Amino acid sequence: MKKLILFVFFPFLTFSQCSEGEYPIYMSTTTGEWAYEMAWGLWDYNTWMEGNPSIENALASFQGTENYETISFEACLPSSGCYMIGAYDSYGDGWNGATLSVNVNNTKTPDIYEMYNGTWEYWTFEVNSKLCNWEIPGCTNPDAANYNDQATIDNGSCIVPNFFEWDNEQREYFLYIPDNLPEDAPLVFVLHGYWGQGADMLGVFEEQADEYGFVVCYPNGLQDNYGTNHWNSNFNEVMTTVDDIGFLSNLALKLQQDYNLSSEKTFTCGFSNGGYMSWSLACNAPDIFKAIASVTGTMSGPDWETCNPSELVPVMQISGTNDDVVPMDGSMEYIEEGWGGAPDIYTIMDYWSDLHGCTDNETNNWVFSDYSTDLTTYFNCNNSNTEQRLYVANSMGHTWPSFAEEEIWDFFMQISGNPVDINEENSNSQLIKTIDILGRETQKNGFNIEIYNDGSVTKKYKL
Image (cartoon, rainbow, N blue to C red):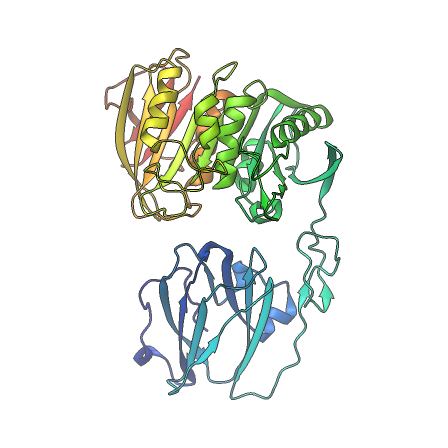
């Protein structure tokens, strides 16, 4: 059986290429609002029933990124068999108008699948086969963050939150602790977006945590006055009075003590409202969080008006030119609540660059797997070992890009002091020269680019 490819924008196999005994299958998926909440996978019966189904063993899988986008897949299936489509929505309110169309063997009327509500949905179909008996593995513990009310067998995947009491509330958080954690290891907070929860961000930075040895914390926000999970990024009281600065700061201190983590290598990043909150911690808790990164967030209006940090920490921002949820041009609305009121992201970064005393900046284009991105680096700052960074991803909407984790960890390494190789080096390659971001040959410490004789390029930050 030929496997479909993740995120295929063009057919890699045409119907005429199917072998005898195979049927063509055509799948077309269209996202709706909140596309990044939507995902699905396709499995055959044996794979589903003989092991835990996962993205790695799916025949096809999809994760939404852009709203109202259509992506098509073509491939071939055996002419008989049973198949399962597992659908997922990270927020739990269904796909918000998204659909999946499946057409096997050029039938005139494709099957249309829609997820109207909930977190999980399962659809099965047969190709010249009798009805198969399916079991659905999942977490059957109602107290777990990933509880699946449709699961028929528990597969040991339950993720149960930890609790920390703050301001008369039992606050929830999740931890990822890699094996063989060194002493004095870094700690990275990952903050979810508005409407979200800590479990939405599980898995972010796991690969980096395993390789470099640090703990990742995924805390949960509380409901605001409108009944929505949020982070209080110094918003106005009409929206919220939750003390999230106190909660996150004191949770960080507790984790530092409990796991012997470094107080000088504690960082925070977040998506959307979590990005707002990271900026708020840069303003109000720089003694705890030693660097911050915001993905599709910005400063809240009240933070922009009142921010007066007791010490300066490096800041990083990732914005998308097509983001209409938190526009990078400073046109964010809901000023009464405090969402809007800050200027465009360039003005914000210039302001922080001036605070740090940075005298130079340079913009270069980096082509990642999903977006061409303009990276502006602010350097020659008062603390010469650190820099500020602004990534502007062309055509990106309100989403978490594929490059975020690697680039954020690379940024945090300015403080942690461990060199990070963004591109894997060929063991047989030889270093030709090292240049800085202006293209000048250098042997100095800091953010450099190493060029090898096989044409490979490696970004490093060295202290």
